[in-house]
Length: 222
Ligand SMILES: N[C@@H](CCC(=O)N[C@@H](CS)C(=O)NCC(=O)O)C(=O)O
Image (cartoon, rainbow, N blue to C red):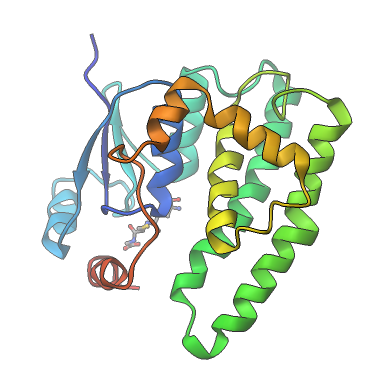
Protein backbone atom coordinates (compact mmCIF):
# COMPACT_ATOMS: atom_id res chain seq x y z
CA UNK A 1 0.00 0.00 0.00
CA UNK A 2 1.29 3.47 -0.88
CA UNK A 3 2.31 5.58 2.12
CA UNK A 4 0.54 8.72 3.22
CA UNK A 5 1.02 11.84 1.10
CA UNK A 6 3.64 14.15 2.62
CA UNK A 7 2.95 17.88 2.47
CA UNK A 8 5.88 20.28 2.54
CA UNK A 9 4.96 23.83 3.48
CA UNK A 10 5.10 26.49 6.14
CA UNK A 11 2.92 25.80 9.21
CA UNK A 12 0.14 28.11 8.04
CA UNK A 13 -2.75 28.20 5.57
CA UNK A 14 -1.25 29.85 2.51
CA UNK A 15 -1.29 27.95 -0.75
CA UNK A 16 -1.37 24.56 1.00
CA UNK A 17 -4.65 24.97 2.84
CA UNK A 18 -6.96 24.04 -0.02
CA UNK A 19 -4.83 20.91 -0.57
CA UNK A 20 -5.24 20.00 3.12
CA UNK A 21 -9.01 20.56 2.74
CA UNK A 22 -9.26 18.26 -0.29
CA UNK A 23 -7.29 15.42 1.27
CA UNK A 24 -9.20 15.68 4.54
CA UNK A 25 -12.56 15.67 2.75
CA UNK A 26 -11.52 12.64 0.70
CA UNK A 27 -10.66 10.92 3.98
CA UNK A 28 -6.96 10.68 3.12
CA UNK A 29 -4.53 10.85 6.03
CA UNK A 30 -1.47 12.96 5.33
CA UNK A 31 1.82 13.87 6.95
CA UNK A 32 3.14 17.40 7.13
CA UNK A 33 6.78 18.43 7.07
CA UNK A 34 6.92 22.05 8.06
CA UNK A 35 9.41 24.53 6.70
CA UNK A 36 10.26 26.45 9.85
CA UNK A 37 13.45 28.22 8.81
CA UNK A 38 15.18 29.56 5.67
CA UNK A 39 17.59 26.61 6.08
CA UNK A 40 14.72 24.09 5.83
CA UNK A 41 13.69 25.60 2.49
CA UNK A 42 17.28 25.71 1.27
CA UNK A 43 17.71 22.03 2.14
CA UNK A 44 14.69 21.05 0.02
CA UNK A 45 15.96 23.20 -2.85
CA UNK A 46 19.48 21.78 -2.66
CA UNK A 47 18.05 18.26 -2.56
CA UNK A 48 16.47 18.96 -5.97
CA UNK A 49 12.99 18.35 -4.57
CA UNK A 50 11.43 21.65 -5.67
CA UNK A 51 11.26 21.88 -9.43
CA UNK A 52 10.80 25.68 -9.39
CA UNK A 53 12.39 26.21 -5.96
CA UNK A 54 8.96 26.86 -4.47
CA UNK A 55 6.46 25.17 -2.20
CA UNK A 56 3.79 23.79 -1.82
CA UNK A 57 5.31 20.43 -2.63
CA UNK A 58 3.41 17.19 -2.11
CA UNK A 59 4.96 13.73 -2.19
CA UNK A 60 2.26 11.43 -3.50
CA UNK A 61 2.23 8.18 -5.46
CA UNK A 62 6.00 8.30 -6.00
CA UNK A 63 5.94 11.88 -7.33
CA UNK A 64 7.09 15.16 -5.89
CA UNK A 65 4.38 17.45 -7.18
CA UNK A 66 4.66 21.24 -7.16
CA UNK A 67 2.39 24.03 -8.45
CA UNK A 68 -0.76 24.33 -6.35
CA UNK A 69 -3.29 23.92 -9.14
CA UNK A 70 -1.51 20.85 -10.53
CA UNK A 71 -1.55 19.26 -7.08
CA UNK A 72 -5.23 20.09 -6.65
CA UNK A 73 -6.06 18.66 -10.08
CA UNK A 74 -4.23 15.43 -9.33
CA UNK A 75 -5.88 14.92 -5.95
CA UNK A 76 -9.33 15.83 -7.32
CA UNK A 77 -8.98 13.40 -10.20
CA UNK A 78 -7.63 10.62 -7.97
CA UNK A 79 -10.46 10.95 -5.44
CA UNK A 80 -13.24 11.53 -7.98
CA UNK A 81 -13.86 15.15 -7.04
CA UNK A 82 -13.50 16.56 -10.54
CA UNK A 83 -16.82 15.99 -12.31
CA UNK A 84 -17.90 13.27 -14.67
CA UNK A 85 -17.13 14.87 -18.04
CA UNK A 86 -15.46 17.79 -19.80
CA UNK A 87 -18.41 20.12 -19.35
CA UNK A 88 -18.62 19.50 -15.63
CA UNK A 89 -14.87 19.98 -15.34
CA UNK A 90 -15.13 23.28 -17.23
CA UNK A 91 -17.71 24.51 -14.71
CA UNK A 92 -15.65 23.24 -11.79
CA UNK A 93 -12.58 25.07 -13.16
CA UNK A 94 -14.51 28.27 -13.86
CA UNK A 95 -16.11 28.40 -10.41
CA UNK A 96 -12.85 27.38 -8.71
CA UNK A 97 -10.89 30.21 -10.35
CA UNK A 98 -13.42 32.76 -9.06
CA UNK A 99 -13.20 31.21 -5.60
CA UNK A 100 -9.39 31.47 -5.72
CA UNK A 101 -9.69 35.14 -6.75
CA UNK A 102 -11.72 36.08 -3.68
CA UNK A 103 -9.70 33.77 -1.40
CA UNK A 104 -6.54 35.51 -2.64
CA UNK A 105 -8.06 38.97 -2.02
CA UNK A 106 -8.90 37.98 1.55
CA UNK A 107 -5.49 36.37 2.06
CA UNK A 108 -3.71 39.51 0.84
CA UNK A 109 -5.39 41.71 3.48
CA UNK A 110 -2.89 40.64 6.10
CA UNK A 111 -0.06 42.01 3.91
CA UNK A 112 -1.73 45.36 3.36
CA UNK A 113 0.07 48.50 4.64
CA UNK A 114 -1.92 49.98 7.56
CA UNK A 115 -2.77 53.19 5.66
CA UNK A 116 -4.47 51.17 2.88
CA UNK A 117 -6.06 48.52 5.04
CA UNK A 118 -9.49 50.06 5.59
CA UNK A 119 -10.06 50.70 1.87
CA UNK A 120 -8.87 47.18 0.93
CA UNK A 121 -11.10 45.53 3.53
CA UNK A 122 -14.08 47.57 2.26
CA UNK A 123 -13.34 46.63 -1.36
CA UNK A 124 -12.94 42.94 -0.48
CA UNK A 125 -16.24 42.88 1.43
CA UNK A 126 -17.94 44.65 -1.45
CA UNK A 127 -16.60 42.13 -3.99
CA UNK A 128 -17.80 39.28 -1.78
CA UNK A 129 -21.25 40.82 -1.32
CA UNK A 130 -21.93 42.06 -4.82
CA UNK A 131 -19.87 39.89 -7.17
CA UNK A 132 -18.89 36.44 -5.92
CA UNK A 133 -21.45 35.34 -3.30
CA UNK A 134 -24.49 36.34 -5.42
CA UNK A 135 -23.08 34.39 -8.39
CA UNK A 136 -22.79 31.17 -6.38
CA UNK A 137 -26.15 31.76 -4.69
CA UNK A 138 -27.67 32.01 -8.18
CA UNK A 139 -26.08 28.74 -9.34
CA UNK A 140 -27.48 26.84 -6.34
CA UNK A 141 -30.90 28.45 -6.71
CA UNK A 142 -31.06 27.80 -10.45
CA UNK A 143 -30.68 24.02 -10.21
CA UNK A 144 -31.92 23.42 -6.66
CA UNK A 145 -29.34 20.66 -6.12
CA UNK A 146 -27.25 19.92 -3.04
CA UNK A 147 -23.89 20.56 -4.72
CA UNK A 148 -22.63 23.15 -7.18
CA UNK A 149 -21.90 20.88 -10.15
CA UNK A 150 -23.42 17.57 -11.30
CA UNK A 151 -25.50 16.99 -8.17
CA UNK A 152 -22.58 15.42 -6.32
CA UNK A 153 -19.63 16.54 -4.24
CA UNK A 154 -16.70 17.97 -6.19
CA UNK A 155 -13.62 19.96 -5.34
CA UNK A 156 -15.45 23.21 -6.03
CA UNK A 157 -17.85 22.62 -3.13
CA UNK A 158 -14.88 22.12 -0.83
CA UNK A 159 -13.16 25.26 -2.15
CA UNK A 160 -16.39 27.19 -1.63
CA UNK A 161 -16.83 25.97 1.94
CA UNK A 162 -13.24 27.01 2.71
CA UNK A 163 -13.94 30.44 1.20
CA UNK A 164 -17.24 30.87 3.10
CA UNK A 165 -15.40 30.28 6.35
CA UNK A 166 -12.84 32.96 5.44
CA UNK A 167 -15.64 35.35 4.46
CA UNK A 168 -17.24 34.80 7.86
CA UNK A 169 -13.92 35.45 9.58
CA UNK A 170 -13.79 38.76 7.73
CA UNK A 171 -17.35 39.74 8.61
CA UNK A 172 -19.81 37.29 10.09
CA UNK A 173 -22.78 39.21 8.64
CA UNK A 174 -21.71 38.79 5.00
CA UNK A 175 -23.47 35.46 4.48
CA UNK A 176 -26.80 36.64 5.90
CA UNK A 177 -28.42 37.55 2.54
CA UNK A 178 -27.48 34.20 0.95
CA UNK A 179 -29.74 31.36 2.20
CA UNK A 180 -28.53 28.85 -0.41
CA UNK A 181 -24.91 29.40 0.55
CA UNK A 182 -25.69 29.10 4.24
CA UNK A 183 -27.54 25.82 3.58
CA UNK A 184 -24.62 24.52 1.48
CA UNK A 185 -22.22 25.42 4.28
CA UNK A 186 -24.34 23.52 6.82
CA UNK A 187 -24.71 20.51 4.50
CA UNK A 188 -21.02 20.26 3.70
CA UNK A 189 -19.99 20.83 7.31
CA UNK A 190 -21.96 17.77 8.36
CA UNK A 191 -20.16 15.38 5.97
CA UNK A 192 -18.23 13.09 8.35
CA UNK A 193 -14.73 13.85 7.00
CA UNK A 194 -15.42 17.59 6.83
CA UNK A 195 -16.91 17.55 10.32
CA UNK A 196 -13.73 15.91 11.57
CA UNK A 197 -11.52 18.47 9.80
CA UNK A 198 -13.52 21.30 11.36
CA UNK A 199 -12.86 19.98 14.88
CA UNK A 200 -10.13 21.62 16.97
CA UNK A 201 -6.88 19.65 16.81
CA UNK A 202 -7.22 18.74 13.11
CA UNK A 203 -4.57 19.72 10.54
CA UNK A 204 -6.64 22.75 9.53
CA UNK A 205 -4.67 25.95 10.08
CA UNK A 206 -5.77 29.10 11.93
CA UNK A 207 -5.71 32.66 10.49
CA UNK A 208 -2.22 34.06 10.07
CA UNK A 209 -1.05 36.08 13.08
CA UNK A 210 1.62 38.80 13.02
CA UNK A 211 4.38 36.57 14.42
CA UNK A 212 3.76 33.77 11.91
CA UNK A 213 3.62 36.32 9.10
CA UNK A 214 7.04 37.66 10.13
CA UNK A 215 8.48 34.15 10.15
CA UNK A 216 7.02 33.49 6.68
CA UNK A 217 8.56 36.73 5.39
CA UNK A 218 12.00 35.62 6.55
CA UNK A 219 11.70 32.23 4.90
CA UNK A 220 10.06 33.20 1.61
CA UNK A 221 11.57 36.70 1.35
CA UNK A 222 8.44 38.67 0.41
N1 LIG B 1 2.61 29.13 -8.82
C1 LIG B 1 3.14 28.56 -7.61
C2 LIG B 1 3.60 29.66 -6.67
C3 LIG B 1 4.27 29.07 -5.44
C4 LIG B 1 4.84 30.12 -4.51
O1 LIG B 1 4.89 31.34 -4.81
N2 LIG B 1 5.27 29.67 -3.34
C5 LIG B 1 5.91 30.53 -2.36
C6 LIG B 1 5.43 30.13 -0.95
S1 LIG B 1 3.69 30.37 -0.78
C7 LIG B 1 7.41 30.29 -2.41
O2 LIG B 1 7.85 29.15 -2.44
N3 LIG B 1 8.16 31.39 -2.43
C8 LIG B 1 9.59 31.35 -2.49
C9 LIG B 1 10.08 31.74 -3.86
O3 LIG B 1 9.31 31.96 -4.79
O4 LIG B 1 11.32 31.82 -4.00
C10 LIG B 1 2.08 27.67 -6.95
O5 LIG B 1 0.89 27.98 -7.11
O6 LIG B 1 2.40 26.69 -6.30
